[in-house]
Length: 480
Picture 1 (tube, one colour):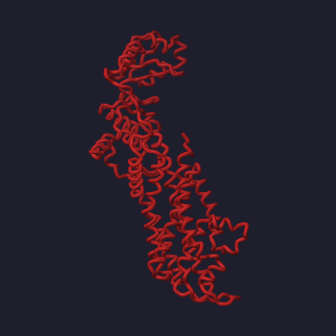
Picture 2: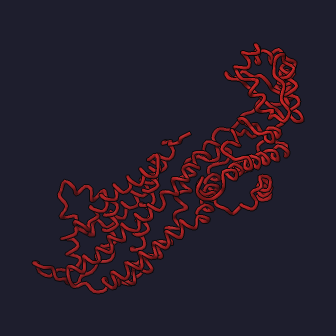
Picture 3: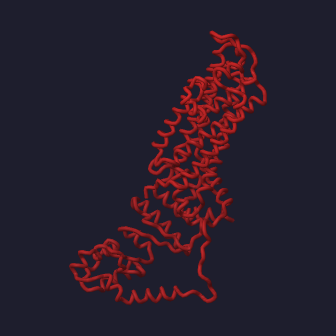
């Protein structure tokens, strides 16, 4: 039933042929300006309102596009709904689409309120009855004519006050009687009381937002193809460059080689995912401002849906990466170690993704968000434990290592794969030692911190998610 109503609305606004199209970016891709205006009308119509207010629906459109929009407005009126429009200097065709006119002069004083009549005859008759008002010329646009004669200069020249004339007219008295009549409540009725908050409960809001995000992500094929192809390409590159380095560990350099691939896994893909996601979140924020102002849903429902919709796509990326890189590198093929590898990659993707969302919510535009992300990623890169080991970091900078989620991922990946290796390796200038002893002595990777590192991943993910919600709720960067 609901789908039938949606199809009816789509047909009403003449968008049936575009029902599977992407809205896109204004002026670049997707729907044209007049199609966007018709879509906006459709969004309001699905709520089945009895009255619709439109602010300059034809502004910025050429004559053909404006005519299409007004045809949609007229069809909406013909369904029994009331449509109130503000409009400036309409063409004859657009002006004739309206049934009634409320005309105000500068200062907000009403000078006419009534029906237009066929070919604007009622309005023309009213103003031409005023002494001194120039008559309309044949073929002249009634809208342009009434604006000319009601200007302040014309009032001064002919010596009239249109507002005072209207207040003294029979039209004014008829309108006041109508207002008084309609203002009387029917017998046995009670005053209207609107429920606080939103019409739908929180669960319904979350489901609606999640459904909307699912459709938007599924239709955004460019975004999905780019992220999956990049993941596949990076996976193949890592697998070829680091081919089977994890199968044999005999020297100190072998451990550093594995550290290199772990470092690359922890940083490159996450940073790439964050950069690809930010433009999408920035566009969705604009939609949030508009739909939240209309009372469609609360910010928390949007935030939950925006974060949740990323999960299946991140899981696919991680599975692509892990299924290619893990066997090509030559890590030990056990279910437990593969699980830890996948887990830390998922956690890594999650905090990078949520950090990207958070920076978009924190900043007024995409450029600043990208710059802030890049600045923080520099610190994550330097203090990740690859460029300089934790034990070699000066004591006054070591807190940055523990505050660095990328370092936790490197820690977790390295220790989960090599922490139980007991074979001896050659270390220049030192006696032979086991892999585990080397990890503890040089890199500072100890078993006692392994569970802590895992918990820190969950904590930073929760923190970024919370900050994203707080920023998107309380920080407003609307330009209008």
